[in-house]
Image 1: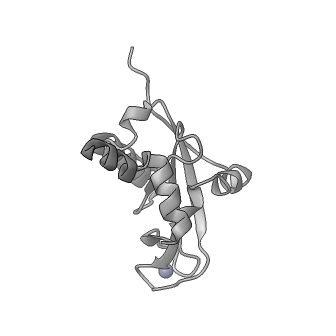
Image 2: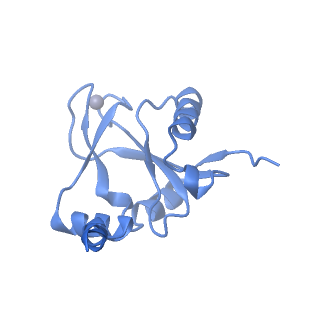
Length: 134
Ligand SMILES: [Zn+2]
């Protein structure tokens, strides 16, 4: 039997806990595309269940979830994240405190820590490449 996808809006405490998870905070709201506000933003985070890990980055799955969030919660921009162990899917979004827009630009901080983190997550592509060449 096919499992239904469930999307749950996190409350304030759960949102704070999610924001503290490793890798969750790398991609952050930086600017409102409507009024150009930058600084702090209110966050809306959702936990998704019923999606197999192999489908986390599936376009059709993400589009369906995005459409659901837009119609039920009126949020324009959403970001899919699977922090920590990578076994749970979350959706991150932000609201502009100035104009209440949800069209918020998210950006990633390109630090060397970030690149270390990425190569750990994807399993050191450079090493694999080298092994293949031997
Ligand atoms: Zn704004």
